[in-house]
Image (cartoon, rainbow, N blue to C red; front, side):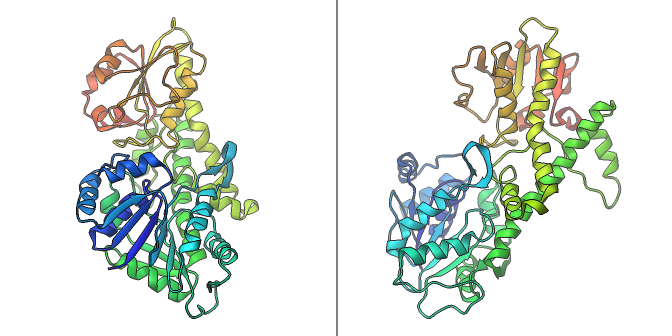
Length: 418
């Protein structure tokens, strides 16, 4: 059993803290948001994730997990805090949360401790973290990349998260993990932590390679989604069904085109490619172009809806889905929400927002004139235009005839799946 302190109890940190506590470790979860701490202390996750509340309740009942606002002494510190884009959507990483977490644990570090950075970050961040700790604690020995670990040093590693909302607990255990140490000794210590609950393989590497590999995973997805979205735009221009064309193209044994949609959202794919591009802007034209294609897609979908609404007298638009992907409540960087916000911007359209995953309207839409959150039946009855933005299971279960003889903008191919 080890004592661990998990910095950040969000989508990554909370499942990890509960999982580690469930495997017998003594875990302190730390978050600067008092509402998050209070929710965890009461045994309730502050976001929906299947089976997480059950795991959390068990960890609290055994006393192996506690939640508080400040970090506590530990043998292993796990940093799992947000790394969003900078102010005004700057295409550079905002590492202020990582820096704040590093500063918070610095006074608690002791020789032999291990610091694991799980937050997705630009290449070189783990080394910068070590330098920051060295400046704050000159009395401690810190490792340097490519050099032997000094005796009694504080070890550092980057072990990027690889979980998908809706399947977090399964993927937390089953997925392979990348273990990138500043030194081989750092990597081995971190591997031992994950080997206690990961059934996938732990791949040992250096911190820079681990940082780049995680960014490459999400940039790969973004580039390929951009191709699908651009292909869909071309199909629209030449009056071809993109889903039919993609289905046929994918019959080729070496072709696997992804599905187009309303854009790209979530905590990773819409953000992380910029971290890779910032490392070498002059060598990342494809990545930056893909980001541009996907960021433009919500505006294109909204323009299609506005064009159809142009001949109607203040029509009602049913936005079917607001979250960033099917069957989750996560709104982070949601392209569907961006479409709805675009349509609600000038108040000329009536918006019927329908999302079975959301109990209330998102703050960006709440209180706007002409915008309401409605159920599926009301949306189908009252709408002049049906805009399918997210393929939630509740929408997939609708019989095809409810869309017959209706004005429909199907941004996600729902009708092709029916």
